[in-house]
Amino acid sequence: MRQYQQVDEHEIVDNFFFWKITALMAKTRGHKTPQLPQTFSEPFCCYTCNLAHNLGGSGPDAFLVRKEATNKVQSAIEIKATITPQGFTDVKRDLDFDELYWLSMAGYENLTYEIYSMPRSMIEGYVKRSKTVRDRGTVNLTEIVHEGNLKPFRQGYIGIVTGNA
Image 1 (spheres, rainbow, N blue to C red):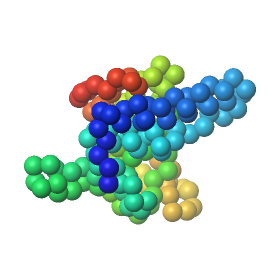
Image 2: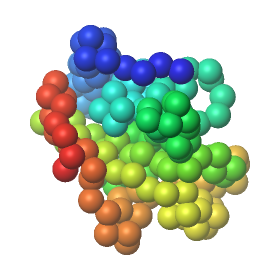
Image 3: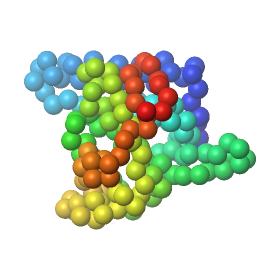
């Protein structure tokens, strides 16, 4: 596991700007915008939300760790990031997490972001209703946010990390 610090900001944000250049080139040439890479979304979400990044390759993406309780894991976190206002993404049907953190980069052209937290219980029904036939269900995170009347708990601009929303 890795806990990101302020000295890691440049490395995390560099991955965003590498992607953004590719996205601008794709848009200029009339191609589909590439997905936001996990090399940015997971470290950025972990850094901004003070999560421990699971670098092991299996299991949840991150953990919320209670420092005052001898570093005890409080929650397993799945991180999803989207660049469209619709927020469509795939979620593993086994739902091996306690919370889903959604990094909405719909405002990526203006360098804005929002992060929402959703408990597994809020996601379960959407994954079960998904008509995709595989180990993942496609869900609309924007729909879940609106129906659950959720507000972002982190928001800001890339390059400037702000506190609570």
